[in-house]
Amino acid sequence: MKDFVDLKKDSNSLKVNFHTHSTFCDGKNTPEENVISAIKKGFKILGFSSHSTWSFPFGDSIKKDEFEKYIQEINSLKQKYADQIEIFCGFEADYIPPFCKPDFDAYKKFSPDFLIGSVHYLYNGENSPEKTMPVDWSTEKLFEGIKSIYAGDAKKMICRYFESERKMLSECNFSIIGHADLVRKFNQKNPFFNENESWYKNELKETAKSISRAGVICEINTGAISRGFLTLPYPSEYFLTLLHEQNVPIMLSSDSHAAETLDCAFEQATALAKKIGYTELAYPKNKNIITYKI
Image (cartoon, rainbow, N blue to C red):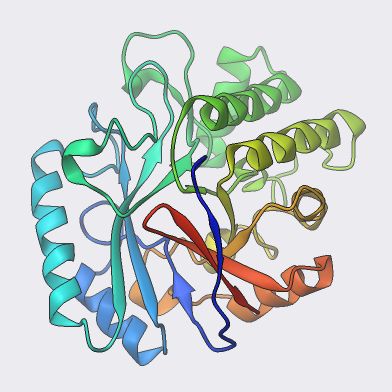
């Protein structure tokens, strides 16, 4: 969010996750099951972030007639467990222009505590969001899209992905950027581009600058680790180094789709952050960035 103000909060034991999916979208567990698991795991803060393509819900996104129920249920859990854990209600909101965007004005009627801005789909000119190319559904869908839409040019698709992220960052008002290099998801097991090539590194450099200008938090996302696609989190070590150089605040996120994975690979992610030189983590609250020591 461009109007975030940095605040210091001195704590060495804060356990936080803002990227949590439940049965309202493609998660395995109910919101309350996630809350109970979070308490058992020692979390102090839990943020819910159902997939959303408001106002054109499709795929795994929360259904149009479920939004109010979702807000009501999370708010109810806030009260029920207030003495044990702090709960935030938000959305992982997709950027698919001209259909939907992660912007507080677009979600005003739901009064979310935070928004994660993510690019999961690449708009290809069709007049329906269902016709967009999914980046992370499966290797089959990915390679099919590269072949049919980008004439087999993986580089062109990847550049389009980062271009979309940079447009999202410049046009929209949100709190956290989700899995900033999601295009890596299938590259470890089914390589289709070289992450060490200069053109790719240049895309990361430009995107790091855009993230910094936008004033959002970047998550270290361990979701691909928990689901067996990667052995390292998003963003890559090189990308994270660029973000550190740009003074971008970071947070740990499990991108959890099951209650048991709420803190998946958090120790690994913390070690990576420290290796890069980060000494603090962050989270959004009331349009401020709260920071605390690792």
